[in-house]
Length: 424
Image 1 (tube, rainbow, N blue to C red):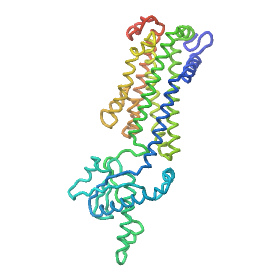
Image 2: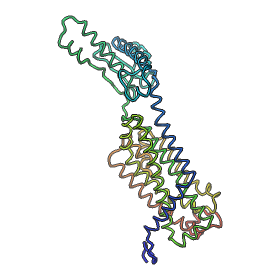
Image 3: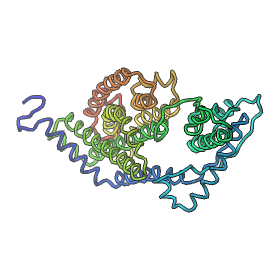
Image 4: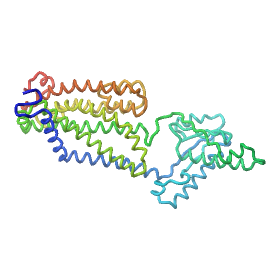
């Protein structure tokens, strides 16, 4: 008999497959798991549909203007936005959404600035949605903070073009420049003052979605692993299992089964969101999520396995289900604290960079840095190796605690007692 095969021909792979299959079947019949999955799917549906419904509403935008030409262009743009509203009333909202035509509808409020005012400060402070600056129609500048609202961009460009054409047409004896102005007017120059990566959704929102999925999966499936272990102890089923299989094979099967279910749940949820995005005409979102999901999956697997064995050990320390709150409190802290730490460290900076290498926060923050575009190509590999090395150590720790505590049913054990083998 070897370490991976017994005299009866049972191998480690087949044993792990049997235990993992049992975990999967139990989970698929678990009402709590099904309810959680249904709730998350509902959240995805709401998150997909609500933004589209909101996009049908006419936005109200305050636009600062500085300069004679800027004031003329924004005044005409406001009129074009009101005219577009009247035209949209005759078109069903869904049709207008799926097949946009003409100029966008918008309520533009013009804020006239004095020559000495600082339009950039107003934009950065978000007192206005955008600012249009310039005394000449062919030298207008549109200022935005993280981006210029598309309604302002399109309407101001259309208004500027109309004014330039009208101005050129009034000139007597058209020069070459006048002809060019008629057929190819100069659009306003767009200046983004605080540029961020672009996409169908803000990258920060994508980061929060990934972090939330990791948090929910690790917490729910971790508690499920711990509860499964203690229920087997309480019902004495574990004694039969340990008599039939080595403890490490049993633990490996539990971890593999729950990892498969966790990944499967996330795949279903993300796939539902992507299908909804495509049906609602947001195909760009699909490419953005797929491009960002590769490293997230890698770090999700490493982080989940890193903690899964410790969740099993926490369940083994309990002698009954009522003890789980006490034996899993450390694990809950190891999940909750890194999650909120990652949320507060969402802005790029030295803190985010350092925490992206800490094993507990790396599965959340390194994918975040990749999505935000502030990670060098080599950094994800280094962080993944750090999480992997920590995971190997935690797996060894979890195996020892689980092996020494899983057959102790008399009372709840402390981790120190299980490490010394008191529960054996």
